[in-house]
Length: 300
Image (cartoon, rainbow, N blue to C red; front, side, top):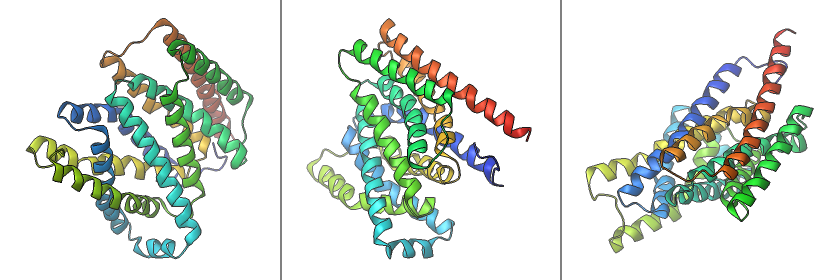
């Protein structure tokens, strides 16, 4: 945690909490669309397509049109945002497919691992100090991943894919010289054209679900705010908080996802429980260290 919090520190933490609660409940939305026949890739394309106007509205509300124009004149920033677009698209794809195929618990493991990756990235790339407790937490998580590999009989590809793709996204957004709304809008614009072409193809072939009924049409349109609002909250808070703090807050999302996976009746064997136990222990060690550091700073 920063020793001298900025005046907007509390809003940044609240934005981060809201972001992760929304992400934690996202499997319920994806599952509902699946029951209506919407496939993974149709949902992914619809998310990207409907996100663009919502992201544009955020830019207008924040009066950042001039910033968008400035970023468009900076090829290096556009390049970084193109890479962050690929990272978040990879994350969306892995996650949506995981939920649709009944692997919410495995995906939640990835979001438990991701904050610990963020800590390591913060130490390596942004010179954020990594305490002994943080190193122990990372070690415990590594043991948990090894046990999960034994439990599944394979490497937890979904978990690792989710964790790595979102860690890369966080790093790139930290490096991108663009405000939250501006960067998010450009990412959505990058995705909008190919997504529109794919959705039009589905509609023309009769495989699309938009317009097939009020319920499914409204739910598909909600993919925009369901995507943009938490991403905007994340990007805004991530630029104002150290990666270690972002990682701490992110434990909210996988906990909710894990509970949703259990409610869906996904298998949770003793070996998988043991792997989660090590990861939860790592989370506890890190959380205690973060709480202790916060208390120490409060007394300064």
